[in-house]
Image 1 (tube, rainbow, N blue to C red):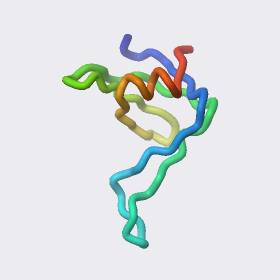
Image 2: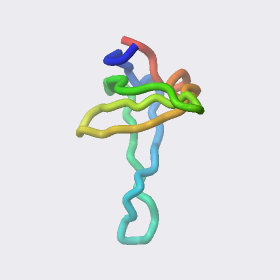
Image 3: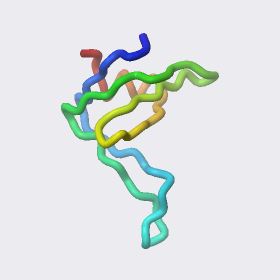
Length: 72
């Protein structure tokens, strides 16, 4: 299961922990068609950690992965 590639099939935003100059969290757009690699999965609430373009790492619950990605 690890090192499985996923392709984003529906774009969405995630919010980074970084705070912008306006005092709000900065959104990061997950673009349709981008390829993400599964790095880790598990934990109490079934999260998956994916790495993608720009060395970005995101951790999402299983239902988000099922809704916005498909295995390639």
